[in-house]
Length: 197
Image 1 (cartoon, rainbow, N blue to C red):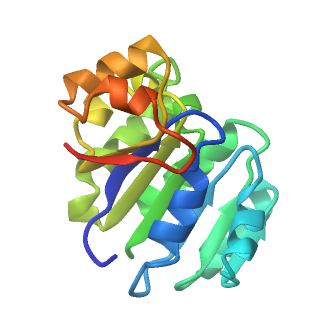
Image 2: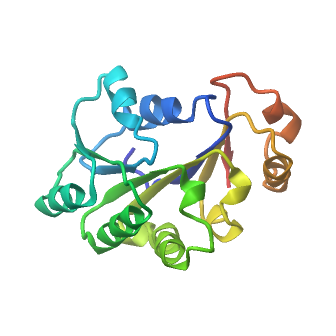
Image 3: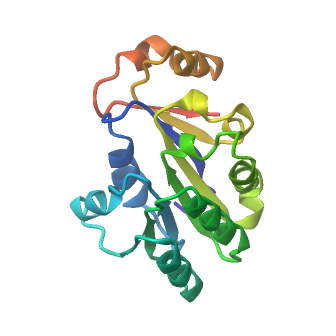
């Protein structure tokens, strides 16, 4: 994946979002771009091990995370499991300040991109909006497409959607001109559609 990455992976819990990310995107990445996965649910180390991806570092608290990022993590994958929302701010600040290319992955992104948290939202919007020119790549993973604000959603290059059942998410898919909310509503585990925005 040497091209600029700016996408969202959305769908109901348990339908294959993280599996898709690990096996279809992360496992097939090329080049030396480091990857930073921020995951409140702390489940990615199991996904990586199942996919036989071993070049990762696990950070369980903010101080360990800051230390490892500042020392440099080359082409490694860093997993960060923040216990508080301040962990997201720290991660976003570090990503913005880095001069080298990096791929930021936010699991449970709908909890970070809410406009009510103006500081995190503003930093995230900068990464999404100016990412290409600053070598910042981003993947947002969320259960709720409609919870990703339109001004962030419209900056995405792709939206990979798994099963959706909430009316607001189905309406958003229809507005994007996707395959149709009826089809997405009927998806089985592992089925998805890629929408080029």
